[in-house]
Length: 188
Image (cartoon, rainbow, N blue to C red):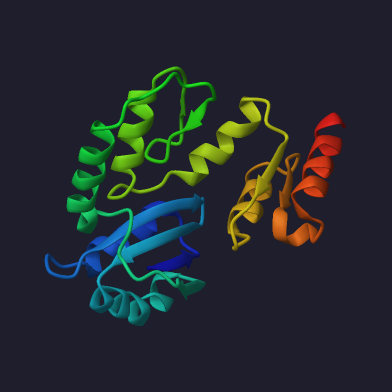
């Protein structure tokens, strides 16, 4: 997988369609920003993309430390396995809104739709841009990223400059202090 920056979604998709083959597909795996996509595909397909990217207006192409082609049809059997596993799970009442990976929209009071989205997201593109644009509409003013990377923190502030985006590791103060900072920012 690789993060591609530069051309818009339409131009990037045209490039992927031109370079992909049946045996070496290239797919948009994550729509992060208007000019940033994560691309999924075989090693051969990604090598081909690297060779043609500069001529297509790609300003940055960064290999990601991911060993599988996630969020694309190459993972369809995994999606089926996840769907079968969650189908055996007794679902409780949904107590919090869920932002769907596959649509970037909110799901309320429908736990079956949540688990359906979780399974589908294994082989479908993640609509992060749609989700981050939805956050201010929902009244979200503070986000906290807990994972090792900082990409989502950056993307959240890029989508809405009024959002306070905190990263647990960046604060260096631990969960309690980061939570306190988030509450203070939210109160502003």
